Length: 142
Image (cartoon, rainbow, N blue to C red; front, side, top):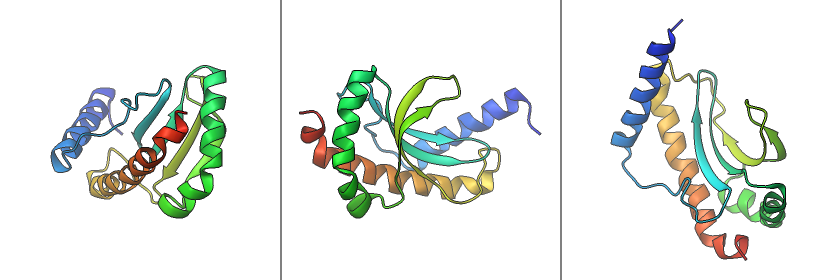
């Protein structure tokens, strides 16, 4: 078991290592679309990349409908494992809409032996998410 401080340091070390191992500028929060962001997630049990819609309900519905119309393209040409959840509750209780791709293997941010697999997963899947977004951004934002 790790103390909160040890866990914090390991998390920090992972993200620094990820940035140094795979230096690149990600779109993430800078999509230029309000409430529309990409995220990396890695904790003690799982890792995934996601596209989160976190704005007011009206905006979420607008983006969700457009993403639903692109679902076949996203899952056939980019991310076949993508999971669409129109209603997703964060740990803090906030309701969002999320499309995500989980890493289907046992990993933990506390286990450095799993870090490389997670980093490679992040690079591959987020790059595909971003390519999809760049290709269809104008349609999504119309």
